[in-house]
Image 1: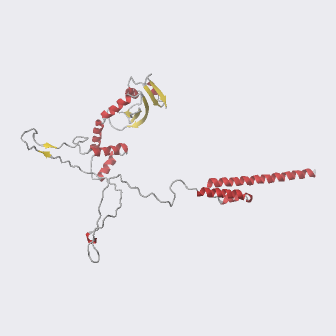
Image 2: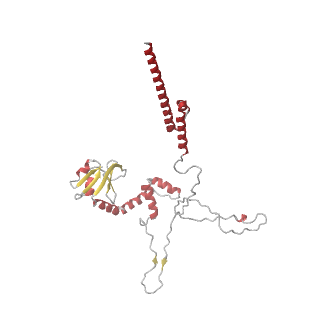
Image 3: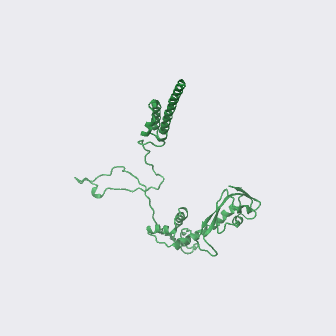
Length: 311
């Protein structure tokens, strides 16, 4: 009986030693993983590394040193720069700077300096925003002959204007269109910017001009719609769009912006309804082709010649 107990005790001691070694190995593995995950070993990590696994710790430190020695991507701190880029594509204006007259001579004897060849050059980028009045002076001519082929006085042709007899040039309207529709700046802010530059203009003047330009663009818009209808493959979608303009028969502010994208054009349809009448009126009764769209039910009511490819 005593012999059997001694054998059991011996086995338990061996199992304890084996488990202790496994625990130490696992602690070393945890420390190594912490090194890889968090960089340098903290004080808590030191306690987790047993003495008999110093070799594992040295390997971990070596791996850390190797990882720290690797350079990050991109330009390294302390390396030579590329130098300042020359914007040679911008318009250039040379400005000459001279010494004041009183300093163009020797301060002791008063003998004047002579100009040395060359100059000390430096450059800066200047942002110049200004409004300019263009006064177009058209030269007048009077014939000197007696054949009377040219009656009266001849004058150079007038400068073309986007809006006849308007006060603003084509370039002015281009900037205004970019400000409003590309940069989404409302007209009252544009007027504030113009006021800072010395131009006071009413809201109605700008709004009236934009309406006139809209009328001029109607033939182009009609051509885009005709080109869109002639296609046989369209991508379509619609989203709600708030319209605050006052017009006869308009109820509410929520309208719908439909977009139609065939291979070579892009048409926008601003309509007060989301019904099937909008795509039906746009495509017409003889349309035939494929529509890529979502599962909105109106696209299924366009007739048997239209196939729906759900996206």
